[in-house]
Image 1 (spheres, rainbow, N blue to C red):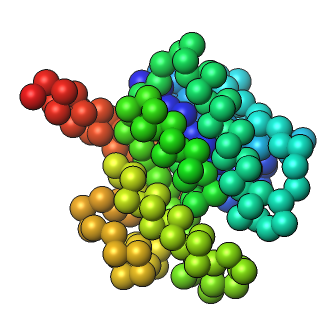
Image 2: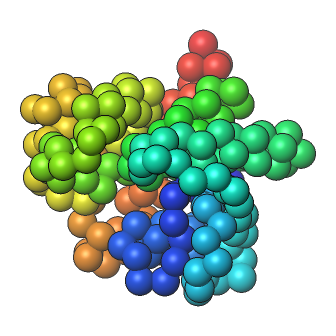
Length: 202
């Protein structure tokens, strides 16, 4: 199994980065292949050498995090397509709204299952960004397009259900502090692939 992770940042100590790193390292430990696609910010990161990290440069500055992220997603899509035209993969795993456009475009283009981890919602963050409404809409779209949505807390689970109207069966609650929580995610990947194979067979 080959997994493509999309994350805005990949640096030591960042919560989302550490989450992605833990999943990628567990996947390679189990004999799978993991590729991480992230912004080239020249920050340090430490990860097992079996995990491939692809850095995407962005030579533009947006007038907000939202506009900057949209430009980054365009670059991510192009890098992913060039890379994946040469080498196949099985799952695309996005992290938060910041990578939703790139992940959904790549997943649809290659007809692969999409997993989305929502680490928090804009509702939870308090709608303090000038682009909060469009960010929340992006979260809704990501949840709609994803085949499975992972969350790390009951609060985020409740926000998805009540603020974004996400169907319960699409959400899986994880405890990243539990032993071997990564195995639960790998099982989710495998279940999605089995479902896909079944649908193709029908």
